[in-house]
Each structure stands twice: as C-alpha cells, then as structure tokens.
Length: 392
Image 1 (cartoon, rainbow, N blue to C red):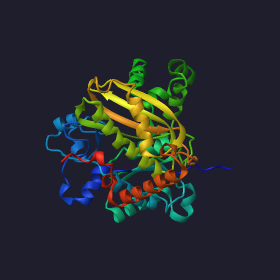
Image 2: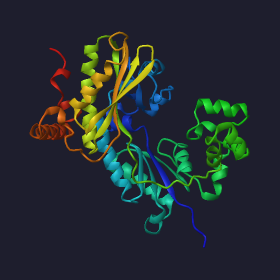
Image 3: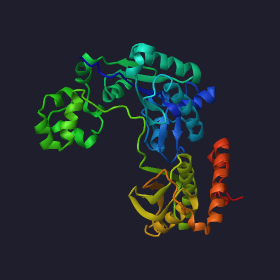
Image 4: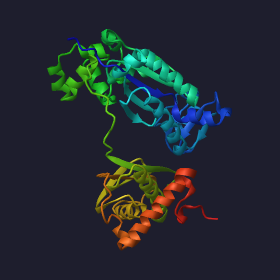
C-alpha cells in the first residue's frame, strides 16, 4: 500500500518583536524599528522590514545598526508582552493540529497530515491559519508547506513578509537544487568556504557528490548534508523539546570597571533567571557565569550546587563565587550572563537550604510565588531587589 508523505507547515511570524511594537503603537507603522539593546551598545534582537532594507539584522551590534540606519527607532524588548501575544498565536496553531513543535517564541512546525480530511489540503490549512492569525492578532505570518521539516523551513523564508510557499513532494529537488549552500542548516561560513574549494556552491552541486567522499572530507556532517541536499529529512514534528539550560545576559552601556557594580548586575541577572526557572516549573543544579571583556574576549565559569534550586539568591551566591575566578575588577567588562543547567522538573527537598530550616525555606518559596504573581501581572521590572533601583 502506498503511504502518502507527511504534510508539514513551518510558520514564522514576520519581524515579530517590532510587529508587536507597531501593533501597540500604530504611529510606528512604516518606520524603521529596531528592538534590542540601546542605540550605542547591545545587540539587535529583531528589526522591522523597513530597518532591514538598510542592512540591519538580528545579532548585529546596535552601534552598527545605528550607522546603517541613522533614523531607526530603537526600543527595549518587552518579553512579557511578546510572550502574551505568542501564547495567543500558538493557541491558534493548536486548533488545527495537536502536533505543534515550537522552535522559538515566534515560529513552529505543524504536522497537519492527520487534519486534512477534516480541514482540507495542507495549502488550504496554511491559508486559513494565516488568515486567522491576522484576523485575531493583527499580525502576519509566513508559511512554508512541504513534505519535511527541512524543506518547509526553507520555504517559509522564501517570500517574506506574509508569504506562502508550497513545495509539492515531486518538486522538492527542483526547489532545492538552485539554492546556495548558506540556506542549509548547520552550514556556517567555515563549511561554506570548505565546500567552495570543492566547487560546491548549490544544493545540486553537493547532491552530485558521493556520500562517502563527503564523509571523508566533513566527517558525519558530510552524509547528513548530502541527504538534506536531496530533501531527505525523516525527523518527526516533536511536541516537546528537552530544555538544557535557562539563562539571561546583559550588555552594558559602559564597560564595568568595578567588581561591586558587577555583583549588582549579577543580582539582577540571577533574579531574572530564577523567575524564568519558576515560570517553567524547573530547578537546576549547575550555575554558569559568562563574562565578555572590553576586547570581546569571552570566558565561562561553572559551579555545581549541592541541591537543585530555582531561587535567585542562591544562584546569585554561586555566581559571585565564580566571579572571583575571573578578571572582573581588573579588566573592563562589556557583558555578563548567568545560566542554570542540569535541569529537573522535580523540586528537590531542601533546595533552599541556604535560608536555614524548613520553615524559613517554605516562607522563601511563598515569597517567590508572590513576587512571580506580581511580575506576571505588571512586568518583570515591577518588583526587584532594592539594590537594583537607581540611586536618588
């Protein structure tokens, strides 16, 4: 019996963060909006298409973005608001299939193979989802429809914004063959240069090589790339992903010179990480400290705690211990970050032993729950340790 190929839709919100900002402030419509750090320091999280026309892109230093687009409007991100809209969007996705795999706050894979009899063919389902998202949120989403995750993701990026690209099973090779190698997952600049030395510039160029030759040149990545070049991707849509770490980092407007200022920044970071951990109902055991010095040299230090935790002060204490193993205070610091790994959904007994007996530990948990509730209603900055408020 012939088995039909799966029907996968990749949905990717268009310039999500700036789009939400425009949604909440229509006066920004049509203007180059950049969400991220300050204009002078930091990194671009996302940019509107008006800003992208000037060469602005995510992960770009904001100083570079400001030079490229002098009239850009720079906004600090509002993750609480973005999560709120994201939740609404994913609830729409789930109306069409329970097989939704989130890739980030603004994109997902949907397997609609089992929904076709009830909702129509995958192209019609994608059109309906796009219309529903626009109608209920005022935002646009681009879609790629294909028989595999790999091809669907590439397709969704072909006609942004508000695009819909369909790759039928018998046209996968025709679709992929002319694409440049930079379109393939896991192929960075170093691999692209190595491929170019072999005169491999497109998917078709790669497809015509023997897998064993590619394995000799690129190891296990060689045959993997060869399969993808032919459009062969047998990965299923997974509704759950294992989270390996939860973290937060901050790039400073001016380099930090003093270890006391660094510790104050770490307290804010630890508070954010702890709140995210509790929001995800997780605890962690290994605290990692990330330091980027003024010359962009980056180091990490890690410490494994005796017990699992989701408490900000415990994370902060570990981060301060790790700070002593760096040159913070001796060398200017551009960025600090804290992350928690070795995660568990089980809250270990005694995880807050830092605060003494079980009764005080319970009080600490209750206090954290109360603070989380306030932050959920009024935003993460509504409640913070007193030392994080500006001096008067």
